[in-house]
Image (cartoon, rainbow, N blue to C red; front, side, top):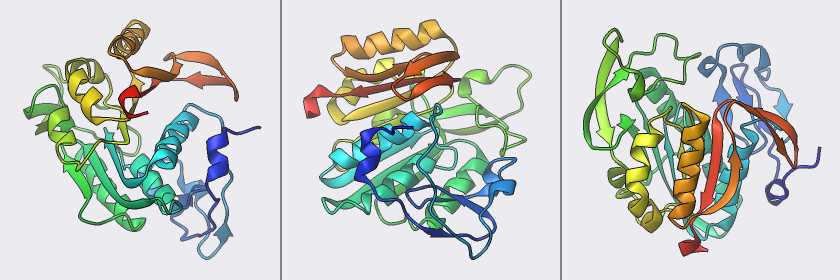
Length: 279
């Protein structure tokens, strides 16, 4: 497979196994407890491994978006991961930034509503040495308005990363969490965000359209995992374009998409837009 040229700009890292973690090529270690079925892939304690570049699946393009943002950055890297899970993309961005002399600091924001996943955010960042005054982990959900929202209680956190504030009905077992608006999140940065990674399980259609003016003002590039329907996916893409964003990548949800790296099956849709105001 011929990889995207962005991967040529970063070195593969050799890692040492713990018996309880898997590793990627940038040197990020992930506790296998975060995903059911991963324990069989843990690197043996003491064994050295230099992982290959990522396979061509739907998450390949998360890698492309993240490394692209890091490669373009000068000075302080600023990135938010909304619906963070265990914050894999923030961690990978931070480790990639260490290979860039042009990057002098990092500011990262993870927003995650589930209690167990939020604990894993802090564990993952700490285990990978991603800590400091510019690193913020926020327990809560991204919503159209700040306040308090209901979020489904997640019984199997190592299997369920798809909980959404949109999915709370009369029979749903839920918890109440803080709701963070886009303004509140971006206000924590000292300057424009290099990348906002959005995976909020359908709430993107409530949150992003009304936040377009602030996003255009304060974000260099944005990646959105889309849900619900193909019509809504395409409608959101059209809104970004009508607001003056440049489409970089657009793959339909629940579709076998032809890419320059082969045919790839997508579950969630994938949007990557660049803000020409910052080109």
